[in-house]
Length: 209
Image (tube, rainbow, N blue to C red; front, side, top):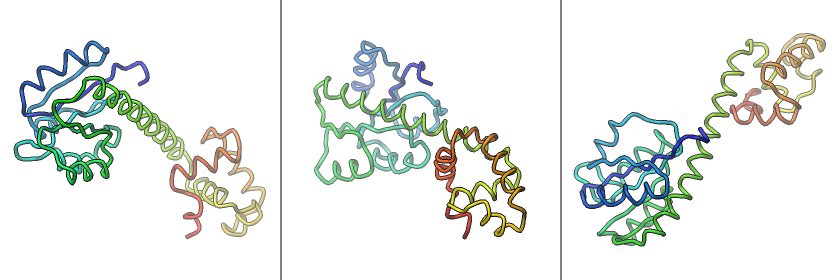
């Protein structure tokens, strides 16, 4: 992921913008892909590499702000930079509150756009890193037996081995054995690391509810 060439997606119904931006981005070493509508962009297959979206606010049918709302859950690793020739304060506030990196009015200064893209790619890289780590955690967790999952949740919630034994109706020796297996399968180097992993998986206190 870290060595993948970043991709800048451009969604704008203005062909002038779609033709002008790719050469600028290419000079910085970024690859770009252009789309004339939000619908066209949504048909494009997802690619888990650092990326961002340069998005016009006013588009035919599905608007830029509507696309932003749709992408919020579907592509959380894809930061958005809005560009518009007809923006207003309310529109800008809405976009920024929803997580946009920047809201630029055409014509904009190239360096301002490039600076926003750099920030967006940093955020995208970090989001992809977190997603990769979470997927690795989920795979490790899937390898645990049901009893090991119960023990992990109770350990992470702060219970001692003796308390876990009472909670599950098993011996303390058995709890220790399960705990050792959990540490090994989760590749946790310490108790603190295991608690951190459990938090990432949404375990811990929830295990006792």
